[in-house]
Length: 322
Image (tube, rainbow, N blue to C red; front, side):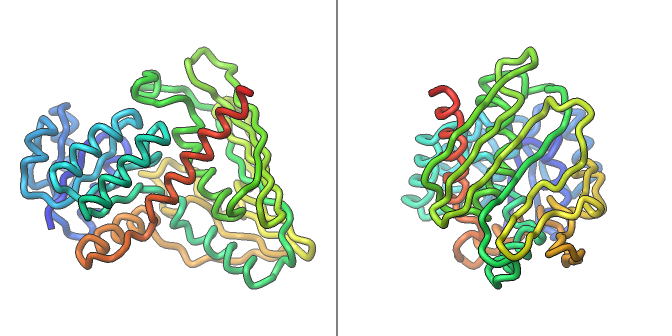
């Protein structure tokens, strides 16, 4: 099974690392010749294309897009029209209509389509959900998901046509996914999205959710938090206990430097540290997609989940402007 990876800069190298580990043949599309050579030297790259059109004419069965958000729809649609199964980095697209369109195109073409959202596969989140469902904290009433950092926007993230809107639709998507995996469907939300830096998009987003199951949710995400503290990125509070991320085991390095290749650390359940069996979440998502293509099985993360996340992000933006 041949694969074409589009974009080997940045996070594309994480995808290449996994493909090389799993022993798949991968071609890359990369116009930067120096970057293409670096990727080829580091990983098993069978061919280098300097344009997307030539890659789409190849015999590859899968296109993996690791490109700026604003290119997801156009390039993804071209891949599906070329009869390629499609894996695209989160978010699905910068807007709801184009996300729905990609899903429909894949369904009509009977091709596999998945959004690469590694947080969805995190073992600590899944173990926390299992223990909640087992009643270990009683009836959960509050979920808190938050991330704070202090970063500078560089490269394509300074271009609105590439970025989409701001930091919420970019990496904030990860944490919205986690919040909704804990809370489920919601009745309403209130939000505040604001900008304190000199940039077209927002640097901080806050929202409060009322979930259909009676839980309340608190969401906070910021790239403009000077001297930020290290805090649990998820907490679930019940009437008989609590579960939250153990910050002592939390991976904080960039993804390409992590020894623990998970999104979150272990969990604390009712005050007790619970070690979680770890695995490479990026390998988990990619290998699951490849198996789905090979066996014609459903993809491990349905694209409707990614669309759910995108719809919620859009509502946060809209509620903030009301």
